[in-house]
Image (cartoon, rainbow, N blue to C red; front, side):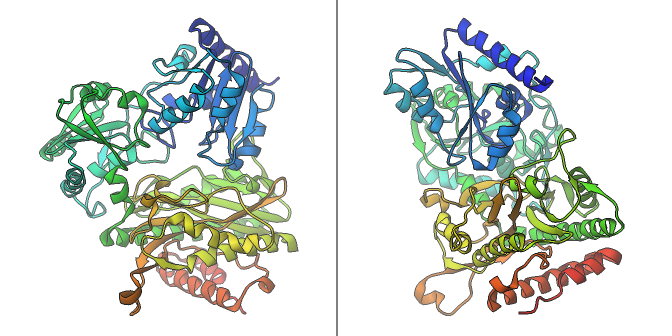
Length: 605
């Protein structure tokens, strides 16, 4: 039993002692915080602390004699490795949004027993699902206690880093204008107050940024708006005095972070509160007085921030070019080094690619932890090399690199797969089928308002034709110097909802993949912008949209099996590479320029 596993077992047993002392029979530890964030500050990384599983999504259930981690296919290989010897069972779910653990709990516990989960990190929608699923079995749900804190002696405190303003020209829409648009949406449903807890919505709306969450320029805070002003609930000392003064000029007053629930409890009886039931916790919802009218709908800011303005699009294109130049410099260095017989590890890729990005104009930080997966590691969609576990890049095969940066003018996310040595026919086939999926969706035109999940099958069709598929979604929304994952749009197998309608200005990834466990993985990802299609037919048949490909980096043609490619697909790829060459050529020189010119040579039909 290694040290890590021993520590995991000790922590689980410590938590079980708390369960016994509290007369609780099981505890649910979701990947969540009081803001229902995808990526969590250290204080709320309890699932990782207890289990050792480092994936960004997954839920842990600990009973008095069993423990189970629920994770979807993106994390199965990773979870199996990280849970080995811990005594924690891996329960494989069909999606990241799955609540299969509710059925598992209902089967494992008996009528009259108690499940605990911290209501301060429990989403309102999930709370309702738990109550319904467990209530049928006669199991009690307890949400009034944070049992994890009683077992976690050295639990991290709240982040202390200061916030800062996102300033013009990149902040192309003024804070006052954003607040006015949100208040107009409030007025449309007669809301006098609006609670916003999602940290990216708060940051976007107030033109503020922070560093409370790794790779996401956000900060921990709640915002309660009324018809003329608002209160920002945030840690003491996090807002510099000059920023606080400018917030005050826009009607936003600072209040202690832990006073959000009290402020809700003090709402007047004639208030009407707008909340997003998928973006607020049970603890905050229960603080609202019974007499206050509550309107439940998606946060207006979530819809507004998904639609980038034309002025923002200009800065996004500049950020994509800077990012593409960094990629050219890195790959030129990488390939030249390998040609000299030097050895690289996955960790070297991470370090040296990050160093190239740091030198580019407007760079602030990475948008997520770099995924550099050599061969079998590339078959884990969310793999990350660590000093304790990484591979040397040696021999023949495929190297998958998924990376991105935060720039003052935008957020990038790109995946490329590169051939090392000799690539075999099976690898070329997989690569080409994934590329065909990327191209098929990139070239798609569709009516404005199309629900984004309806587009998912287009990228999968070339793989489905050969009996192949992948377990993750095809595309996620991307923020503007903001979270690399944002909604409401999602090109995936998700059940379509009206809020997922595709609108001009939305940025979405296109990233089909194919994974051979234990062998290799392929994923080819670009970011695209929804733009209006300017055709005469639009007047008669309604407005049509198409994708502008924003990402600027060559797609390696050495892995392509041309026998599987159509002439029109090759023509699109050649046109894309001509654009990449034109846009990046002024930004690179020397070996990077030579590499760019070589990798953007047209592919013959």
